[in-house]
Length: 414
Image (cartoon, rainbow, N blue to C red; front, side, top):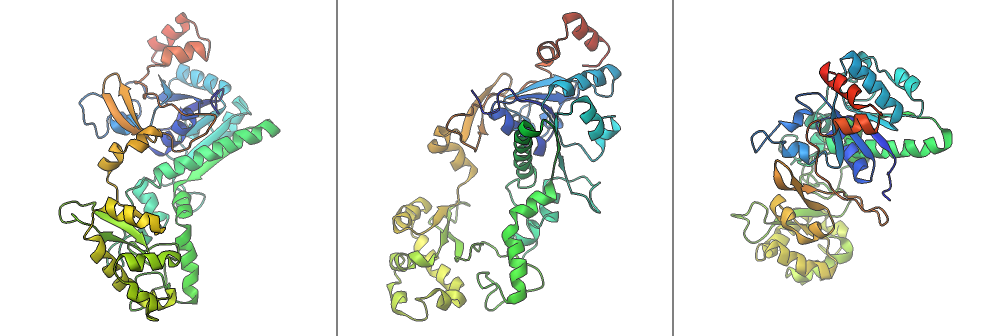
């Protein structure tokens, strides 16, 4: 039995943040019924297509294990079907623009009237405040949540991360909110509203930078590359590749960097492992030198220290560096490209990277469930074709007969 078997999700989400949430729930066994617009469906079906007239990877990689129905919720009969779906579902998830469901006639109050036990879960751009009615996309969330202002090098502009911390990060938070609300419902018998704002998610993931904002009031941030010769302003600055944990760290070049853009490795000069690091790079002399042999003494020489580390790493491939440093308990990690990750056997073995077969696209790679439960393994099934399960859901979930389904199709409700 899957962990969420028996839970039914009415999935009104689209693009990335909402589908990330509902896909997680589907991987754990929830029956996720994705409601899509007739004829077009989720807009990502057609976005960034690499094969003509085939669902894009953007869509397929975010909608595994779901069932798809097409439903015109602006049509009166379509609204009636939607109402019946609300009655029989445990969760309604959506990431529409602010007020969209209200304008359709389905406010939270109305949804509660239809099904008092339902969990109504929403992704929003912002929480209550001056920006709550604004649309938000990934990079907007990163900018307004503190991610961009604290990412990049001190002399450069703000930079957004390649990781989708706003969209997918908020989807993960919403999934946790949903299962928490379902757990509480076991005690109260009542549903509740769950809202996750993308700005809030990004700020939550930037907590160490908010920590540093407060530390600034008491002096310079000594682990930042601006120390001791640079200047600190009034806000947490960009810190390049510096470690956020208080231990000096940096990305250094490895052998082959001239032609390989990912021939780099991150090395942390952790105090507890400094002796081994100094010896392996040929600087055993530092261990007897009071200018180098304590963390405090090294604070004003961080850049010089990593220059010396890089002289050593430049003589070796990144995986060779890792093989040498790991037995010495020196924290390090090679910069892995998407190609290297896609081809890594261990990630295939754990289901973190999976190969999926699609009826029109063929085989493609996708990410699998990052959360591993010992008693509820997650299988990854292909994404649905547009409206593939319309008849199945209308018949099996709502109990409609063939005549009623045919009538709904004839008048454009589905």
